[in-house]
Length: 129
Image 1 (cartoon, one colour):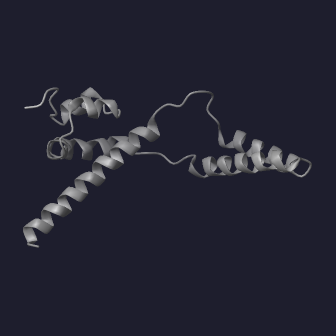
Image 2: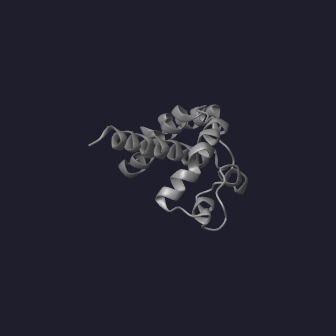
Image 3: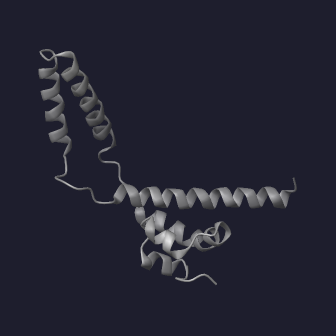
């Protein structure tokens, strides 16, 4: 394998990583339905689960353990912020070439949540050329 080929593969992997991180950032920043939970409300619910778990039947305990695990995971990820503007900036640099190379249409980008403004900045046309 030539050095040029290796460099092209590395560039493709890097562009794919940038696109993936941006799309993951969009997903993480997407508003969720319902009332937002705070770290304090999560801790209160965890305390309630701990206090009621001993006196429950095995099936109810199973459900409480599962809820506790989900709440602990949520508590561990609460406060983790995504630097969406930085991800967007990198995405704009590589999206057009990546999309052309992989055959990704404007509508496909839109369906995964990329805004029209970002696609315009990335110079991705509404129609294929």
